[in-house]
Image (cartoon, rainbow, N blue to C red; front, side):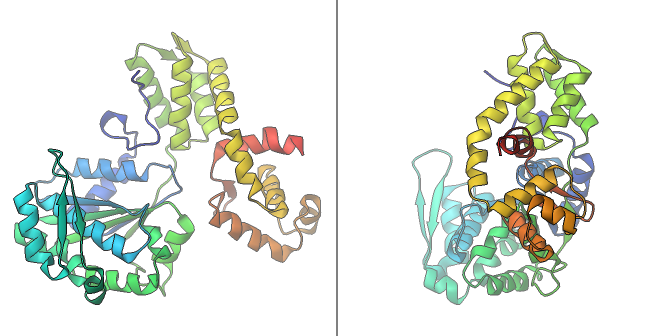
Length: 376
């Protein structure tokens, strides 16, 4: 059964929701050759936004190379991924791939292995020892091919914060910056979901990528935009949803893109003709039950003071370092608060802004308040 809502994968075309201002800004960066840094929590739609902006750009002289560093943990993996995807974008035929590889990467003794499928899938392996001695040929590959083909290139790198896991990652960042800042035909769109790590890479003046490009902090999509989108998706399938049900979906999901789409889909599946708040609440209760075991595992990996801190945040306690709050929630000393916050930030459980501290997962937050803390 085809459902009208998308989550857990790239949303494209009519499946993509709103983000008009961000799309315009990113497309302008792409066409002007401005580097872009996109930061938001996980599952807020960064990848979908970049793919959408690339499609909207629709410029005959701009090519897009898209890399995902989710599984990359070494420099070698990064270089091979960059080289392979660059070759894939610039060379559509087997003969072109082989010729380009020999011309630009010959010193690395490349070995290209093609799959028997008709879509020109291939693997690339190279002499890692030679790459370590002189990686610049690979870092310059998009720029050289863009110059040769008389076009422009945008290299989009997802989960960019994973370079922090590389051995000698600071030196690696210096190599990237030294090479990339000289490019005239290539710009970069770097995005990741670990806000703390991304901020350290791009906002710390002592880091190589400080002021590398236009930093965009992705915000939640407003409720009204979600309501219009959900209503249209229901209408397309000859189903209806009332205003109160729309509001309940965005309230329960706290406008979190992944959960809004998921809860809308679960509600849609339960709807025969018209969706109301009863259907939405039942769908949400089912979602909470479905995720409860994952939430229990998450809590099991937290210390007692970290759990107590989450309770204080859930109950919107003010002045977390005040003696009354420390005693009420058994948080230890005021000096301990900063350590607790940093630990929970590193675990991607909370986000801290000047205005507030909030849980990144609204369903986890709901479960804590309505299930876990009631049982303690």
